[in-house]
Image 1 (cartoon, helix red, strand yellow):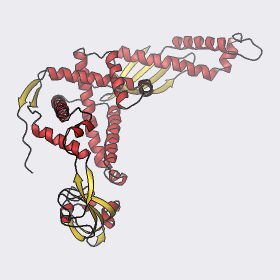
Image 2 (cartoon, one colour; image 1 turned 120 degrees about the vertical axis):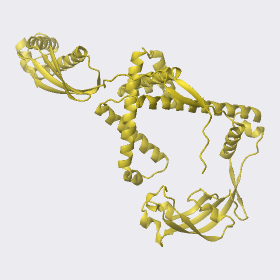
Image 3 (cartoon, one colour; image 1 turned 30 degrees about the vertical axis):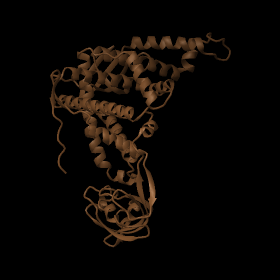
Image 4 (cartoon, one colour; image 1 turned 90 degrees about the vertical axis):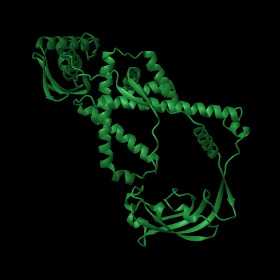
Length: 440
């Protein structure tokens, strides 16, 4: 077998393979014998039909089976011989094939990038020395109480912190808002709409103008749509709303006592506080670890430059676009708005994808150099965890993974995480005070 490799572009090669005619003929002879053993032709017992008749009768089928046998085998041998680290699937073109002649084919492949690893031990990173405070604990407890909040209808003027139930119609420059933003029907008219009476709820400044109103009152509310408003067509415009107050509701939270704690599965209030503090500490530690790893990744990205396989970047870009669109849909962003932002979404996704792919190749090479392995037990444990998280029976989850070659993805995920742990253990960590939030 003869193999030649031609560089087409960074990370792209053309692999030409030639299998000698004697090996091709031997493959044909072997395949004809296989067909002869299995074929049943009229007038002949199974396996007794003449060889020439079998070769003629099943000519096309035999040719296909010979190609299926020879090309994949030769392709794998060629990669091993040339030590090519191929990513993705090859584009194979058959050039010459037939009995009595050499089989020639060409495979266009993309390969993993070749680069020198930068120094990856002792990377400088900073870790904030934050701790869970009593104020953090009280905020978390308050959030738990708000989850059980009830809304009591009251016969009085609305106060800051109440909820007003209203009917409204909105205009800008004397025109219905839908004339300017056709998809913003909810901003043009609503009935029995609940608005929190604070500064930021709904449209900034809307709710606070209803303070003092009672059920049955009518008010004109003037607003300025902010520059970063969720509906871009309305950014920096003025809106006028005619509002009828249908009712006023007071927020009522449960008392902070043992009964409240029991409703969350704790023995008493003291145990609830202990459990919440532990959860906050776990969350804080997770954030610190994620911050360290993000810093390590950025350090690596900035220390080396190399070309990336186009197909891998394209596939990862599609994955990122899917994630962005899915997240926006969960947040209630309309399909029309997503469509209008598709160029910006794709551009952001492409940048993110390139960084992800580059990091993956870096971590993979570090893992190879440091002999970081992933055991079958670790892969099985990760699959078990993911199956439980998605509430899918483990056996079914494994079958789904196998259909899309997802077991390899799980292996790569675990390997990347183990490599990041290695980098973290070998990093130069500096403990620093927590950053002070910028004044608003």
